[in-house]
Length: 430
Ligand code: HSE
Image (cartoon, rainbow, N blue to C red; front, side):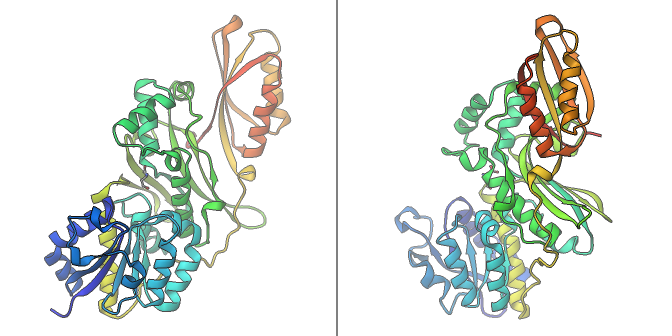
């Protein structure tokens, strides 16, 4: 066997530590699969004293020096965040090293520039671990489905929020109570903002949409709503119509008279319990893909955690190492389609609305008029109770999101409507 391929590891937290351990434990198999052994050249960390598990001669605080060293062939970035990760990846690429990254925030913000730099340098930039942890997803979208037309990708791509929503459904708890439990059990971070407010899912949605629609989509193009406003009432109402509430990342190619557009959004929604995504409980992730020729596909597995994420990192490492052994770089994603981003206001959605009303003549007509005046067609209406405690539950047909939100605003001004108690989008209902 020839000289080893030398890997620089940037960051040694939960994922980096698992990558190091698996590189050691699986060294013989990896060498056989790649055709050359893989050796760790160095590990860049901020505080070497916090890593007694790493041989001291591998640790360095000089990350730039490490990635540009002549004896480094490949770089694995598991630091996360925008800087210094971006500068380090660019330095590595410009120095001719292929890069494996798990950095969703960076790829979602600056993927175009990073890919351009990698293409110019003739090296690989792979990032399977950035979306849905262990689940093989980006390579299937980029390679296996490269001959198909993807129409829609709908995913549960954040385990923290899926755990919280699952517990709300199981126990009837409110959001705050379920979040507190998730934090205590280690499912939610001390600062849960990135997960709970949908930033994490929005970055992943941007990456999924870019690959699916051959179009550069950034996190700024993604409409984002988190789950902190989801109430126990919303979850109970969902159950009443045979649905469950999930935080969905939805990437769609929307046909239009002036050409197709790409609509990418992250928000909580009711989905029927018969939908494959409804069965995804706890902290698991799953992504449902609809393509012209392939039909419906479902990818399911662990979306976070050291070992699952390290599995995806190592898969990429083997791929870029094989390319290096072959003396070539793999094909990167394409963005030739350049489809415009469709604003949420113009994106067709459906709403479920629950209203507390007075059960007196004319109320239903008044409510129906508010929908009609905004061009929104009602699919179903149900009344629960009577007298002062009547509730109207309405599910709409599809309409531009702006028309639906204007209808809700108008309903809040209707005197006979005592309260708008639940408003959630609905996906996957026939
Ligand atoms: N915090 C993410 C989640 C995992 O809860 O799924 C990393 O993206």
